[in-house]
Each structure stands twice: as structure tokens, then as C-alpha cells.
Image (cartoon, rainbow, N blue to C red):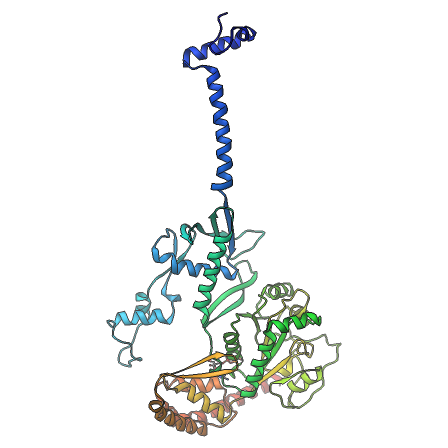
Length: 549
Ligand SMILES: Nc1ncnc2c1ncn2[C@@H]1O[C@H](COP(=O)(O)OP(=O)(O)OP(=O)(O)O)[C@@H](O)[C@H]1O
């Protein structure tokens, strides 16, 4: 046997004849020394291992951050992306939002484009506007939707992906629930964290004058979950007509409660850190308006719960109460309508006849004496309108799983029908009663409705109502004087404590730009409305009489 190239003759002899033949064949056909091939293979394998190490350790190390739709960061980032990245038109897959969800600014823009960019004046009775035309001309906005977008921020490449998760049997969701995935090259989260902080601050700046309302809404699978319902301009506290002392006391109470020192104090004393308020009064007296204004002043979101939702049950209520953020207002509306009472075996509270308004409650009998009027009817409504029991609600309000730090506001039209367990101190710490308006309240409403547009009212700090005067004092003094005398005349034409502020506001709205006419027609409107109310009451009594017969 001849020796093989690169292999000594002795070594060639040691090779089995088959191998030797194969090596010889390889060398003859490829024309390359097999040993060189082996060496090259080893070098390539080493290089590959090294490159893989470098690639995974240095180049393709992505950090990934996921943000779910129910997290506040989601909104912040979507807003930031829409305003910063869409401007550059770099997105390939977007969600177009029609004008039906547009703001009043968009509508004004559309109207201006219709009238040829002339400055907008008020409504013209001779020129009726079709809303369809406005919608048709309103700007279409774009939002990120199911797409990828690579962009550079602060010298880092960030891959933004918006994905939609379809509902899964085990994890029931709305029809579509989105989430965002952020990826960034490297081994540090810092670039993504910087981006998120920037988006958060941007969103804060954009929304600081708005209040976000979340509602517990049943989804397609009949599961109740918190849904962001609306974001509307915050209601200014000065626009809520309500006893000044009670307002002040409430603001101070909440201000103190929200302070981080108070939180520490509660923790040190082992007291559950919660605060509850009861707002009672006839429909349309301002309970919801006050809640809105409080949310605006203290920068809190509102979470609205209704026990009357057909899908509401105790476990859903517990879950919802544990899911609210640490700082928010939970609004339980019309709590009396749910007909929650204790079992009949428990003793019912006794009647008292004390007047109340914004008093701090320290004992159970304090609460009761405040809410029970002398003409109180049957206590409690025995026909429960919800599948949630009283004990279920009490557990949800202050059970171990209930969120600490939140403010609970319960509203009711008939506080006397509430069970004492629901309103005991600790659950209701302050009771605010809204009454039908006095002459002073009516004057205030009139002034608020017709206040010169050149005056804008702004509440800058809690407890402080500042009127920013945008015109020179002399210029505005005269119209304000006229308005004040009209306001007095208006208040004198209407009997006190007969109409709700909502009803009076409804009347004034039909004279939006004509305070004089409103004043002239007020007495007649009040008389007619009172007569109508009396007739309706008579009819109702008659119907009830027939039913009992
Ligand atoms: N005290 C008030 N100050 C200013 N506006 C008020 C007041 N009360 C009622 N209004 C006006 O009436 C309308 C209804 O008020 P709101 O919803 O706050 O009443 P409510 O007491 O919560 O009524 P309900 O018991 O029916 O829920 C609002 O548009 C609001 O502007």
C-alpha cells in the first residue's frame, strides 16, 4: 500500500484498508488533503462557537417588557406613541378612530373648515348644523394597533409591538384585549424604563385637567371587569354649589387622609387605612358633581360600581374592590336602590330626628341620628334588588382583600333606608347631606350659568378657589353688576327648597344666552312646574290607593 499524503507511511499501514481507500478516493476526487479538511473543520467549529457566544451575549440579547391593557402605563405609552411616532408616519398597522369619539376641539375644527376658517361664533338659529356633516369633516386619528415599530430613543433601538389577545376559555377576556411588548437590544432595562417614564410624564401633562372614570362592566362572557369608561375635563370645585363650610371640611378631611404621613400613622396604629363618605340628597342635588370635582382636585380616578348589574355577585364585588388602585375614588351609586338589609332577626335601628350636614361621625348612634329624619318610613327595603347580600358588601368594603388607601363614596336618595351596619363609623366617616337649594344657592347657579365668558374660573389648589380675571377690572365690573341684580331677581322669583339644582339648571339651559329672558320667565315656570308636580303626586296617590283596594 502506498502512503497517503500528509500521513506517514507507518500510520497509513495502521489504517484499515477500507478507510485508507476512502481517504485515497477523497483526495483523488476533491483534490484536498483530508487532514487539512479536518483542521479547517475544527477551526470553523471553534469560530462558530465563539461567534454564537458573542452573538447571544452581546448582540442578540433583547430585554423584553410587557404592558397589559389594564395597566395605566398602557394608556400613557399608547398616547406617547400616537403623538410622537405617528407624527413620523413610521407605523404600518394602525387603528383609525372615527370622529364619533372625537373631542369638542375636533368638532370645532370641523365646523371651522365648514365655514371657511372664519372665527367661530355661537349657534345661529337661521343656520342649522347637521351633526353628520361635522362628523364627516372631523379629523381621523390613528392609534397603534397590532403592529411592530422599530424606533430609536435616547440612542437605543426599541422595538414596539402592539398585540391583541383573543379571549381564552380559561382566561375570559373581552373580545379583544391588547398588550404592548417593548424590546430593546442589550442586557439592560434602562432604555425601556426611560421611555416609560417619559411616556408617563407626557400622559400626566396631557391629562392633568381630566378625570378618568372606570366602570365595572360585564363583558361578552358575562364577567364583570373594570373598563376605562371616559376621560372628561375635571369639574371645577367652584362650579359645585354646596354649603361652603361643609365643602371646606370635606376638602380638608380628604387632604389629610391622602397625605403619606397619615398613611404611616394608620399603619403605626394598626388601623385599616380607608375612608368612606356618604352623600345623600334628592336626585339632581349635586352628589355626583361633588364626587367629580373631588376627583379633579385630588387627581384621582373614579371607579363606579353598581350593585344592580345583573352579573354582580359577591365574589365579583370582592375581586373588583381588590383590583382598584391604591389611590382612587370608588363610587357606589344609589346604594339604597340595592335594597340591602340585615336578616330580619337583627334589631332595627331606632328613629331620631336630628338635622345633619357635614358632621363627623364617631359612634353608630351619631350616624343614625344624622340620617334618620322624623318622617322616616319603613327602615330598609326588604326586597333585595341585587344578588349581593349586605354582609357580602360589608366584606368587600373593608374585608382583608379590600384595597387600602382608596376613598369610598356612597350616594343615596334615601339615607334613612340604609342599614346601620353599612354606615357605621369606619365605613362612613363623614356624611354630607345635599338639600334643595336656597335663594343663595339659586343666585350662585344663575351667576355660574351666565358668568361673563371672559372670566374663567380655576381651582389651583385644594381649599382655594381663584377667579382669574382676564380683563381689566373696570371693564368687567358693570356686566357683573347687572348679572348680580338679575341673579337676585331670579332667586326671588322661585320658592326656596322646592326644585333641585338640576331642574333649575335645566330651565336656565333653555335661555343659555339670554339671562334677562330667563329672569322674566322664571316665576311662571316655577308656578307651572309646581302645579304639574302636585298633579303628578295626586295621580300617583290615586293609583296607589286603587292598588291597595
Ligand atoms: N349642587 C350643585 N352644584 C352645581 N350643579 C349641580 C348641583 N346639583 C345639581 N347640579 C347639576 O345638575 C345635574 C345633575 O347633578 P348630579 O348628577 O350631581 O346630581 P345627583 O345628586 O348625583 O343626582 P342623582 O341622585 O340623580 O344621581 C348636573 O348637570 C349638575 O351640573
